[in-house]
Image (cartoon, rainbow, N blue to C red; front, top):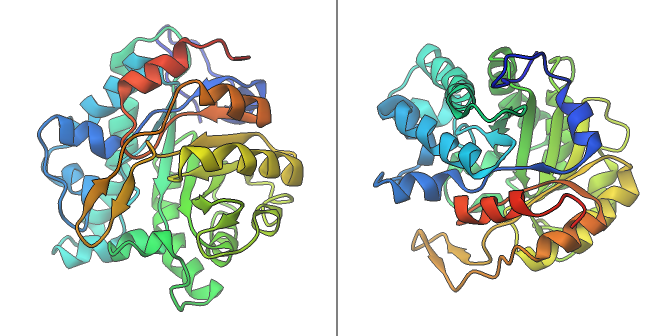
Length: 310
């Protein structure tokens, strides 16, 4: 498992690079695609473009690599066999599209010719992302840990087989779903990070973050823990808890600070994502920093330009 270097040199492992600190993650893929004129107003979100306009996905990744990101998260957040089936896409084609999400990010890394290692994180969103009703911000779907594991495992197997550097188990609202994901990644041969969406110092489902992060402390497959798709002001406290409880590197990529209105399918309010906040997150223990929804290449460029110790 290797990452793409502009000079073709062999890469060190993602886990090793992350432990060294200072990596920059990309920003929101959906807002970059929308800025290019693509309508993402359906249940598959950016995953729909894997079938209809894969080159657009590659270009969106490229914009972030060119802005200074070291890591790109694939467009597979909402890519599930169940979601594809609702659009008439069969299981074989669905698996092809999931694998294509990894290849699209790899192709962007090849085009970037960045002169530094570039990494691909295969996104696996929560069960609520497949429902496309905003429940990924609530959790508590009424499913058991075993049922959630059976939902996640097949697509994680497909994503792992596509050869990403890491699996991004992201926007997890509920410690029960985290437990299912930690079981589902066992034996896949690809490292993973586990990232909760939070409100204050609790998961969206209301569990204390100390308990939620403790689930990953002894999971060998998990090379990092953290938070994403949350308010910028909730990051520092959560990062400190994650670092203290697990002793693992921490990832942090919040939203812009605007609020998603699931009923209206629109963002409300103003951005509160200030690049200066990155200093706080890094001081609290974050080793991989970027943005999620509504955070674009300009912000990622400012993060990349800041000294790693800043």
